[in-house]
Image (cartoon, rainbow, N blue to C red; front, side, top):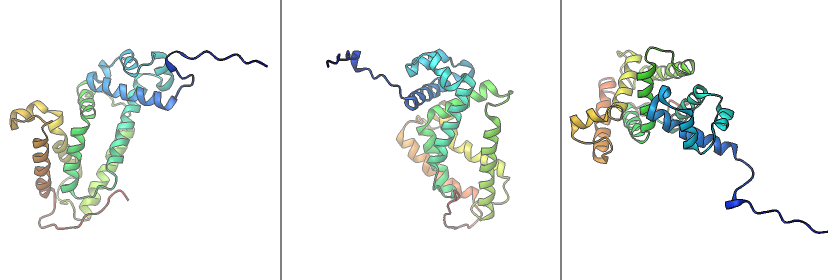
Length: 219
């Protein structure tokens, strides 16, 4: 019995799709587009072009632009939480860590800036979930205060704002950073010196004379 040979697919194309890989391409493309133009300015067709797919496939995987933005937020937050696994409650460690992470994740910082500009007076996308994360972060601050790693006289919400400001400001405002320091944020020398500053400045958040050993607050 003879069998007909199947014609070769052009350019070695593979018939089956890889849904997980497609999702990853879409999310990566969406992050770049949202970081470049914000939620309001981002275009679904531009995201589809970046991901090398058609818009119909994008809608199939994520429904609409808001659901896609929500998924980008969730993935980035999960990535950052995973990066912080095992981080101690010592601000001399955590402040330089979060600064260095911001330097490596400029798209995330830009996305938050666009959101601040475009959604300042509106309801945040996935606001309920993100408020829950903020509540957990405040819980860790209070725990660190109770254990003597952070000064108890500071309001936890103000402490959290101050810490996030210190670690994100250079990437959020690179032009001001360069005006003040004469160096771009991308300069490894600036990053090294600023991380060292944060290690020393961490003492401002600690109780006077504190020499507590580190503790893992992820448990």
